[in-house]
Image 1 (cartoon, rainbow over the protein chains, first blue to last red):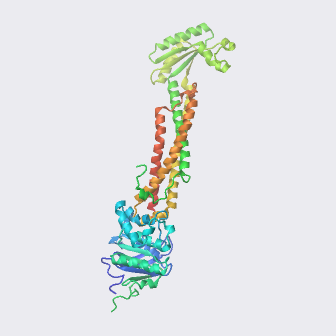
Image 2: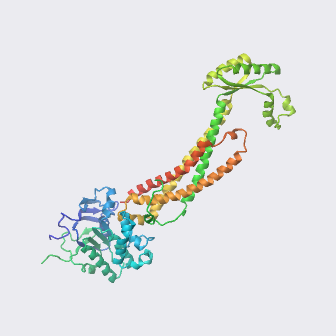
Image 3: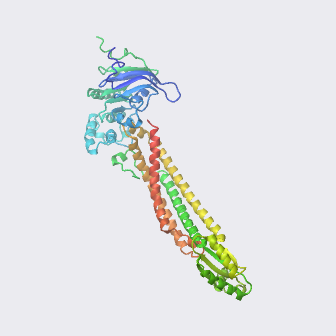
Length: 243
Length: 301
């Protein structure tokens, strides 16, 4: 019980406390969400379709503010944070979307380079990291290809490369394996694991229970109808430290 | 900066294309109409001012005494007496030939040599220009002088009969100015719609840029540059067409040498205004685009 997502608020990278989210006048899609994410950890977020996973991730990667509650990221209160400070925080977060969201008229190389260009890195300084990233995802030969000419797996790898090239402290992935075959899913998971070993906190939303078992020491949060089904952490996988 | 400088790698974030879509063409048409309305306004205003200056201090004394000898003597005496007054700038008797020539245009005889016209008993006219601005005081003194030198003569201030024309021309100039203003507002509205359409079209790209940490300023500069260039193309095209039309009208106008038409011209100030308008339009378009984009982006987290 001492090592659950609910525990150790001090030093947490992400802290949600009593968070609720509603769109317009409708009922809340997320209610009473409280958890802490520790630096360097690996988390799976599971739940049925419509449980609120994407809404929760949108708050994590700062596309959405909560309707109520407290959200702290990197030690700062995001609810009260002025809008103009958000870009600085977003640069510390990498996001992998289920539908990739690559910019269609840019090459794979330019899509990967995007976060560095936005951050103001010179063309001279970004060519090295972009080349390394292309090698890491095995797409050196397809660097100039447009997304439309890449396979689903290749697009997903480009999306992952774009998400991690700026060395984010937090990586958020929404169903990253939803559109790829099982072999590719395992390869992508391997990429996330490698990043996690380098110190990046990883949050992966997935339906695939088999995927969860592949990462040692990963913790699980399960959403049911907009609420965390395991607020005490008792259901997290694996049942760690119960020796 | 009217057209913001954006690194070439950043420019590629929006697909490169030129003069596609209706915006440059609509802006070109509006710019052409704006320049034509502005030149009409300037020309009319200058014409109204020229007429106003010409008639404001001028009166004509019409001596209608039946006896032609007495009439001529009264006219000469009045001219001499008026010329000696300190409030009179100049006094001039209008010769019979000049009168006949003027009336000849109405009689179908440009030279004024129509026998019927020659037989008409024409009044003697004395044109008098005042000095300074005290028109009412000068009129009182002149009426007293006329009563003494040419009893029964009529004093006709030019402002009375040409004033309404000058006012009409001035009203037309204001209307042209209003049209310039309305077309400027219409151009700004086109730019606003273009900016909003661009945001809607490229919303997925904007969302991604936001989520990877792009600031509103970075995104705005991309779109502001694109819209400023598109509108600059339209403004340049509209200006070229308007200039061609104005030059054609100017060439035709140069042949008109009589009447009110001869007083209309743009003058150096007018040409300077017409040259400045396209530059102001580009600046206005860029500023409008920037404000529209920033306002729209603020609605996205």
